[in-house]
Image 1: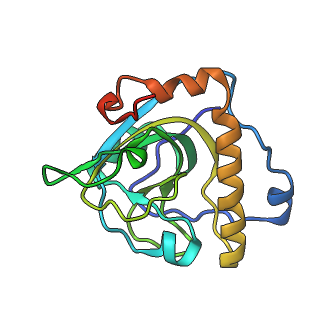
Image 2 (image 1 turned 90 degrees about the vertical axis):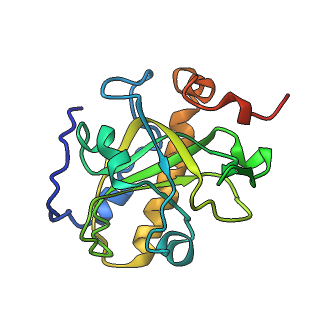
Length: 197
């Protein structure tokens, strides 16, 4: 698959169709990550629009614009999968418990969120873990390992939520392969945050 970098200008995303929904695979990507993956991202979590958790039941960590350049210069808009880790520290103090700082599976949306008509390109990471509190201001590191689907527009919030839930299942199944699982222990992540076994 060849990926095109997204333009800095907002584009028209295709509308999600019923045939797209029915034809979605439950496993994506080759057996081993292939270029441009893995892509390493890091940045301080920014306040976004507050829609992920409240409106969609899928809280996200928004990365600052400059931190998504390694991604936005080599890939197209869409949904991706990989692993992410939240730093326990904020302002020099440890505020998150060890369990919240593990390397965890994630899905990431890179795009314009056409359903909400965003005016800027954003990268929003949903870490598949039930965090008891937000982590604005914490550093997040992510390794993006593959592409799930293109960015789409929706006629209903319910259709968008349905695709997000499918994205999560696809990500978990795709990450369960040995060549992907090994990135959980990549040196890019802060091993001091890993819980002791």
